[in-house]
Length: 329
Image 1 (cartoon, rainbow, N blue to C red):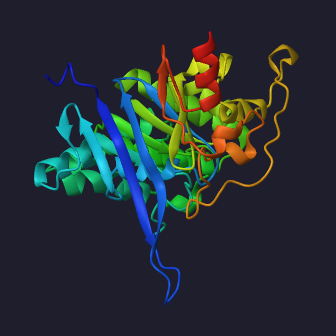
Image 2: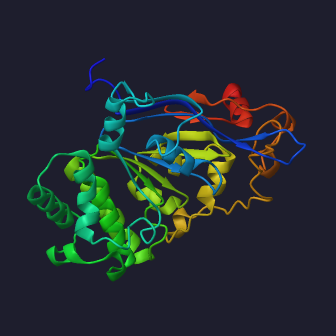
Image 3: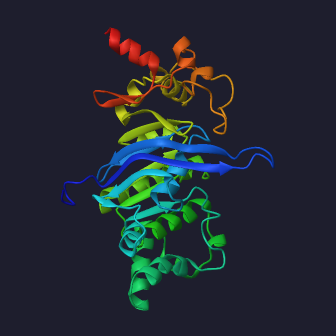
């Protein structure tokens, strides 16, 4: 399969398990932070990964950028295996997949000027001259709406929105094709969130970027996503086109998440579905469907049987109740 035919990013059954010590005389336990997630990201598209804190979405982001190594599964970029530990794969990961972190205050080195921060990836990964690196940094600053005089300033001299623009510019310095955005606007004021989201969408159109957009805020996701993957306790429970999921969510968990999204238009408001109880511990997940204790539609077999992720048209859903409903139609 050629580069043009292969999907840009293809993950199959990605897993990340963490060993946890429980005490001197107890056996070591295992936290399944990510337990078999698969997806395909197409060129120029945005896959949004959503769910509550602790569902595994940020763990997925760290695996895609190889900040952490998967416990199992496969990850390919244009048909090339990204999990191989060799110089070619390492270079491919560094240049073609970049990450923008949640906190613009913590992701920039306070001791370095903006110009140094932006040029550092070029200095490490290319043989560009100092003059070419500076020209590239100034070009990228202009793309994200920063001025030339900002080049010699330190991060503490900028607002939160400006710092996130700097973080985005740094992520784009090596001309990546995939950007993993881990809650990129959640630390910003609402008015600034819109500016940064619009910037990301403009850059996507201009540079042909593909995003894996990690967020808990569905009102943000609705504006930027082409496809949505809803996660619960390390697993995907629903995945499909963003417009279809927002129009007609099928999994009870997706319905509850969408019902909590604020709507200005009364015609588009949903009846609020209040989830009872806390997210189960990944150290001791419940038997059967992980969501059954909080689900208003749960039936007896949900307590015993773990649902498989099944395909229904353009949608994938992991729910025993939905399986029954579809079978009876």
